[in-house]
Length: 301
Image (cartoon, rainbow, N blue to C red):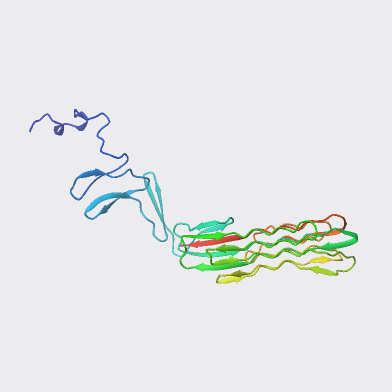
């Protein structure tokens, strides 16, 4: 065997090789052999991939797959693996716009609360000759709650819209929209407050109904929202309180206990808006808007 050949020299001193070295195929890849021992290159590898063997076949570059309670985070030259104890709460998702729910990796079970939108309060007409008037507040949205022993990977959902307050004048508030999850749970919206069409002086002479509390269906537990308070005509003449939404307990908009006031809008998800009131004025006032619905998803390993 000749002594002056590439095999008897340091590779760096071999002649005839390109300056950049040998090109064997894809960049950022690994050399593997097939079942006959013939070398080849894998495809270009991405963050966190490893070489996985296959009996009697060519090994391939692949990513690890996380099992239940396991989270895998690939990085440049790294793989991070974390385990979550079974039954642990790993995340809470608050869904406020309609769309598709996607479970957090590692989620196995979920508890869902679907809360409907709140109704709007009623508007009021003008009042004169020392007369007072007030309209009913909007009702709170209902809540449907369900435990899923097997969490869906994805689920479509709709968030109930808020009910609008009645326009200035004798105009009822509108009902809130229904919130649905996975075509199973429904939290219906609260009803709109009833607008007054009367004015009076002296003692209270009329009550104008608040909107009904929204119902709920499809859950392991279905709760109705709180109805709105009635508007009062005569005496102080005030608009009714907005009803609270079921479960979350956020207060509805506070009733207007003073004259000549637009109904206050709701401040908590699913709550109803307040009714308007007026006293001895040619002006008209609008009812307060309800608040939109909400879905809360508790995710467990």
